[in-house]
Length: 73
Image (cartoon, rainbow, N blue to C red; front, side, top):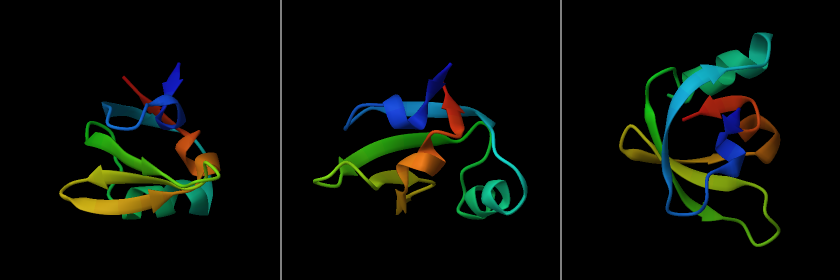
């Protein structure tokens, strides 16, 4: 299983499944990260957390803990 956390800077991936429960999963879905959407990793913060991704034409910062719950291909 490959997660969004493992995608290198400049790389793209398609979301396969969201893990997590309740409010965490709902917050990720509200940000536009849903099954089947393409995500591109733009930048990583100097200390590695958070990462900046492009989703549906806009930039979004995601904590590594949340990125670990997003399965991609």
